[in-house]
Amino acid sequence: AQSVSQHNHHVILSEAASLELGCNYSYGGTVNLFWYVQYPGQHLQLLLKYFSGDPLVKGIKGFEAEFIKSKFSFNLRKPSVQWSDTAEYFCAALTSGTYKYIFGTGTRLKVLA
Amino acid sequence: GAGVSQSPSNKVTEKGKDVELRCDPISGHTALYWYRQSLGQGLEFLIYFQGNSAPDKSGLPSDRFSAERTGGSVSTLTIQRTQQEDSAVYLCASSIYPGAYEQYFGPGTRLTVT
Image (cartoon, rainbow over the protein chains, first blue to last red):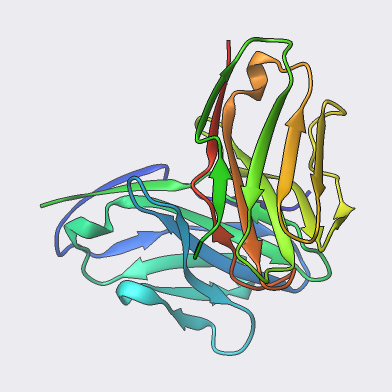
């Protein structure tokens, strides 16, 4: 079955540290990939998405993600986190020909000021 | 309104009772999705609508769950004979079209079955 794995469930960083959150998907065909973020008390919102083309995707607030097809990965990165990045981050995949999003279990990031 | 709205925001119900959860998508969005988020779990896809039809109902956990959408707008998720394992946050999202378009999420309905 198709699945999305986020191996880091909780991450704690100090401000200015670099961030990388892992995301792996299991599907051999064409896939669209997304990262969503949920800030405390707010709705889920889109950070960035990959459809095709350049595997390095830039999103809002300085986030980026790299699609590595050979590793079935779509890791989220930010060179220098801020306290305001404290949130829960969800990776999601949409396989070609379906409208059924598969979400990972999420990673809770806490950034210490 | 500008975003997706859901009501009620919180619902506490007794085991065995029926509940209805409502979603108002962004005006003009043809696609509407329902998800369930249980403690420690990711977002579990339940159902999506394209207009008023639901081509994919495969995510509904049991026949106690049903959903409808009328007028291409408001959607209602109904859970009959609620069980404690139904306790979760139910999220609704809409997008301009189904497929690889950004989904806009509502605030969710937190359902607690006692």
